Image 1 (cartoon, rainbow, N blue to C red):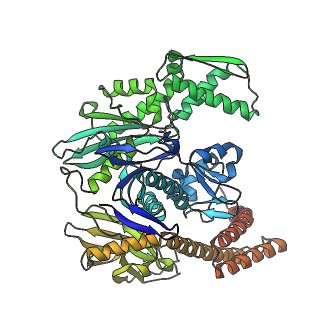
Image 2: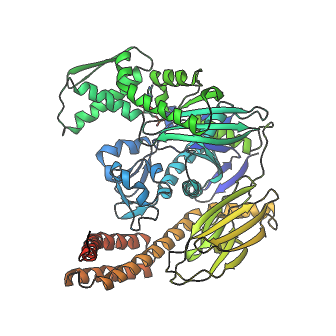
Image 3: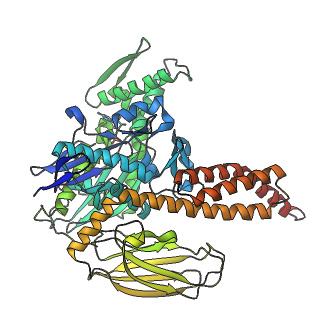
Length: 614
Ligand code: AMP
């Protein structure tokens, strides 16, 4: 059922495929798969080589974006302009990433520590969503080349522990890449589906998915009842993986050979050799190699000894996951291996030994998740007759936030019944009323969506802006009726309304709304980015003004003047429409005032301590 569309820009006639693609958007590598002749298949790149696309984005001198293998080559030669591990930043605030900030070779920024982070490349600021969208575009291109047709629908996987914000960020990245994200699926669920586990509705099973990649480790326990997956527990370590094996091998070798700490080229070469040795020993008993004319060797036994403490850590996590799920090992029916590092023989052995049963490892562990995403896509396309399709929300539901932005609370295609909530606060000192406007649709600005209703939460006790805790809850029952409740949690004041969300939109209208959201994704995201930057800047200007007022005596005349100058610049930038300029001005103001704020805080504390007996 391929439609024909005309690409006006290129003047070419392009087929539109009705294939729904499955995407594994990974920390280190990403893949795309689809169902070909009834079987899931991961798509290879040019010259039919590799199915893995390194999740790396490089900005060249002309700000042209390169993704994948070519970008990976720039990691060492041009780290500031080469972004990796962007998945670790998805939906995160600066506070969330503080602990591993040094892990990134590029600049991670945020002015307000609670707001979502940005990445600075040259003089431009990018959100993790925009960066992930580049990886998704690359995958979309790859599959379109293979199919010789355009695709626009996708299923994307995320770790089971991803929260709402991280899932929404992944959806937004898909939209920005021109993909209608039909569903966000948990990676362990996808891995099970790849093995056909959970496809037969009459089989109840408990499954462990053990996922050891290059730099991350997760274990999840899933319960499958009548085709519905529930995550019972997850455990893991976001900084544990095959890279640690490589490091352990390097350290072992470094006992015998000497490499100058500062000699990065040799260190890099040694690291690559360690990885090569590790991989070789997944199918051989011995490895021999050389570096700078010195020969190095490793055998299976030694490797096992070296990496055993790391593998043991993962087994401990498995033990915890089983306990958390309130299960015993005998309750586990199947164990599935995911991630390149599960090729390591000791890993397979230890996992099988711990769970007391053979592991599922026939599929390529790098591809399993993408293959499963393709299976899920096929189910959604209605092509797998035996699988029950659940009722879902046809369009996203959310509320209007500052600046007329749409904040999605229950995303499109969420199964119903469903419930979700989010916390908000006031923006004005002493605010006693809050208007809650409920919208349906996929666009970033509420003015482009459909308004379902609005109500006012009255009687909030007067408090400074930002202090009230207002929880907004959405509940959709099995008939699609939406109840929206707003509650100020400090005082208990609440209001609730009922909305019949599904009604009044025809299939055609829905299709048009979706199409519009994809067509306008880029401009919508730009508008959102600009609005958000303006709101953030206004908040920062407020605090800067307060700061100058209350610390007059502490600041030197020059410091005062410079702070004023920077606020004037920021204020001027907010009047314009250049997002990067606003971000840059915020960054400059903050970089300048941060040390001053620390000094003021120290002085104020010591003042408060004086005269007090401790
Ligand atoms: P992933 O993040 O899932 O792509 O996993 C990549 C990790 O798998 C890296 O640490 C690789 O060194 C590791 N890996 C790839 N092939 C093998 C192999 N044959 N044996 C052991 N580890 C491997």
